[in-house]
Image 1: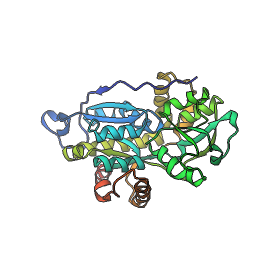
Image 2: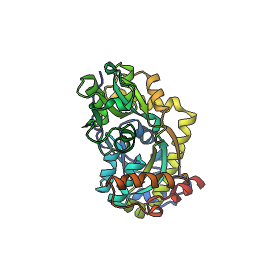
Image 3: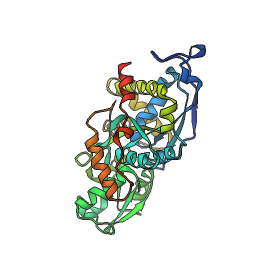
Image 4: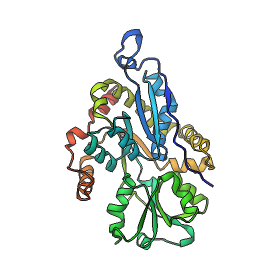
Length: 331
């Protein structure tokens, strides 16, 4: 049986060495290496595992970047930490980013991955539910305030004819949902990998739908405005490391998957390496900053404004900063 992932303890990775074309300071280290430690937030679901791999890869050490990591159950919690200026960098989907920009002027410096295939609405196997509309009157576990939670409540449920009040939303972290389904305290869940694969593999739940056709769920690396202002060179060096992570996901996926599998087994989860690999393959890791993001982001912002979750549509020139990734790609 699964058990919830405990919040990871903070871990500090001391760095050394230089990083390519980065300007060197005293002692041969990059000038930013003598500056403040980069506080890295990441979620312990599958969306955060590329970041976890980055931190385990040694690439940041080689770039001369000191890091301290802060693990949480989902990206919207990282966003809240950034709004409170407790964390410098973190990943989450577009909806959470828009809210973070509205509340704390957070800035997107890269698009890291697309995760729409990792998100599923799942129901207890014994209920035989196959359609969203059949969730009427049911208890649905949802990480309220998260990007996937917002998409379900604001878009998927209404499209299926379910209004607020037609189902009972049970607020819950994604890492507790499988246990809740097994205990039959909820009837369905809106969840991400690897928890969906675990629930399916253990015969606890069956899939109703994934998000890909509704929302491909681009996941951004966002920074606080303070960090952008004070550490622009560090951001570029950091994104160069991300480009290498993207290459390894394609060229050495087995090794990457083994690192991620080790993370979950260390937290008490029992899953095969094949199950883990199949779940991780649903994360499309391709760090960059596509120029066609604005229409999608405008659409999501309009939904959030309509639902009174933000005060205004962002100024996209302030919110989306592709220039850091462009510098990283140019080398």
